[in-house]
Length: 342
Ligand SMILES: NC(=O)c1ccc[n+]([C@@H]2O[C@H](COP(=O)([O-])OP(=O)(O)OC[C@H]3O[C@@H](n4cnc5c(N)ncnc54)[C@H](O)[C@@H]3O)[C@@H](O)[C@H]2O)c1
Image (tube, rainbow, N blue to C red):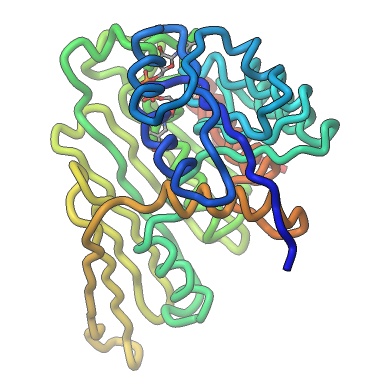
C-alpha cells in the first residue's frame, strides 16, 4: 500500500468561503490545516481559534512557507490571480474560488503558472459536486433523456443591505457583477453537459443596485455544437434565492431545483416519454442534509494531487474555457452582437 504524506494546507481569506473550506481540510485524513491568513486580523484569529492553528495576516509570507503543500485562496476576486500565481511559483498546489480571476487574461496567467510549476490548480466550481447535478450528469450520459436539445437555467438572490458597498459591487475588486459572480457557475455547468459553446449573445442590466458599470442581471444565450441551445438568467434582484437547471432531450427532460439552505431543498426530477407524443412519466427525489459539495470537491482535488493522471473537475483548462465564454458574453453586451468563439 502506498503511504502518502499529510498535505499541509494554508487558507488565505477567512470570510464566508474560507470558513467552509477549513472543516473539510481538517476532516480529510490526507490533509491538515497548517495556518489561516487574513488581512483582517480578527477574521484570521477567529478561524484559527476554531481549528487550533496559526493565524497570519501576510499572504506573501504564507505562500513562501516551505511547510505548506497546498494554498486555498478564498479572498475577493482581485487577489485570486496574484496569490495563486505566487503560490504556484513557490511550488504549492492551489485551489482558488471561482471565478478564475477577474478576466480571461488573469485566468490564462494562472493556467500558465500551473503548467510551468507542474502543480495542480483547481477552481472552486463546487456546483458540479451537488448530488442532483452529479446524478443528472449520469442520467444524461446513460442516454435516458436521449440527445440534448436545449438547456435553461436561473441563479440568483436579492443581495442584502449595503450590497453595493461590498467588494462584489466594485469591478476593480470583482471583475464584474452578477454574471461574473453566479453566472460563471451556470456557464461551467452548461459546459459539463454540452462542451464549449460556439456562439454566445448577452444582455446585461443594472436595474436596482447602485453598482454601475457592473451589472445586477445578466441574460445569456449560448449555442453549442450541433445547434444545441442554452439560456440563463443570473440575478441580484431575485428577491427570493433561486437555483433552477433544466436539460431537455429528445426522449425526456431533467429538472433540478434548489441547492439546499436558502436556495430551497435540492430536488431532481426526471421525465421520460415512452413514445413520441406521450405524456412523460415523472419521478422526483429530494436530497436532504448538509451541502457536501465542498467535501467532494476537496476530495477530488486531493485525489488528483496524489494521482496526477486522475481527471479532476475544475482544472485549469476547463476553467479558462468558462472565462473565455464569460469574456465573450461581456463583449456581446458591449457590442450588441453575437460573438463567435473558436
Ligand atoms: N463556490 C461558491 O458558490 C462561492 C460562493 C461565495 C463566494 N465564492 C468565492 O469565494 C471568494 C471569497 O468570497 P467570500 O464570500 O468568502 O468573501 P468574504 O468577503 O466573505 O471573504 C473574503 C475574505 O478575504 C479577506 N481578505 C481581503 N483582502 C485580503 C488580503 N490581502 N489577504 C488576506 N485576506 C484578505 C477579507 O478580510 C475576508 O475575510 C470569492 O472569489 C467568491 O467569488 C464562491
